[in-house]
Image 1 (spheres, helix red, strand yellow):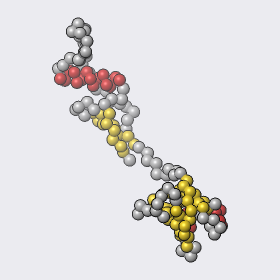
Image 2 (tube, rainbow, N blue to C red; image 1 turned 45 degrees about the vertical axis):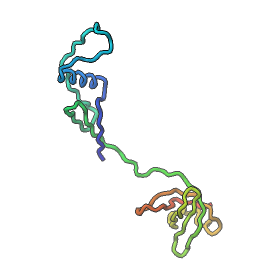
Image 3 (cartoon, helix red, strand yellow; image 1 turned 60 degrees about the vertical axis):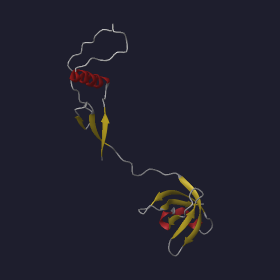
Image 4 (cartoon, helix red, strand yellow; image 1 turned 90 degrees about the vertical axis):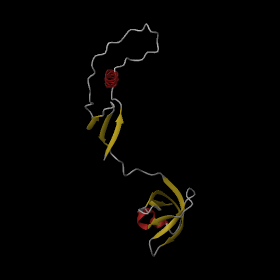
Length: 148
């Protein structure tokens, strides 16, 4: 994935070169808030500097630099465990629903998402903690469910 970043400079040197370039192109002098007695600054013709550590860069006429860098996207991030109670589980079909205090909607639970060592606790207890995810239709589903 490529991400475009707009930046004015990567270093003080680049910033000063762009400022000098702006002053030179517009035929102006730097503005000072001091008295009229302030010394005049001599400015040499600016040099365009392109940052070398970027993958792709382009200098626009306005003096801005467009930089494209590769960005890694995390797909698998850990979600916090949520507690709840199993309100209904149909053993013949292999699924059920969990009620959580945090969410007002029933959360779908498939038997393949129950940890193997806690399946035997299912008939005895209804307390569970699980990770919450969304399915392809946007509905809440319980993953890595442990019954205790």
